[in-house]
Length: 175
Image (cartoon, rainbow, N blue to C red; front, side, top):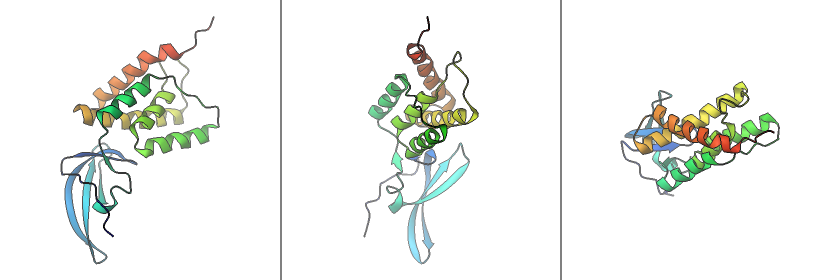
């Protein structure tokens, strides 16, 4: 049974759901357990990690090309929306946030970034909220940076600017 492999070329940026944006640095053929396997060799600079993914498994693990411009616009619009704060236990919300980040879906990652964002004049976050916010915003920034051919810090500044501009509209005025 030959699964239709997604075709990525050396030099392409790809999104691997659990690790974010990486780059295909090589296509390898290896003998493993008597079988010849063709592998994508992915490099994740931020984590200083190299991952080998069998070409016939790439689609199954959710590996994909960078998002379309339409999806990127939708994610940026999501950042401007009103944060959804659920009143469930933190451990449950944290699991849901982690699942959204690891889904690799840019709009879901933008939702987590938006929902956990705190403007400077808002109450401080717990350590674990901050960790998840940083994971989501970093993942979003890396894909934005790859798409706009910039670096992660510049992309993160853009994301934070959007969030800071939207935040005052969503904070209830007391009076």
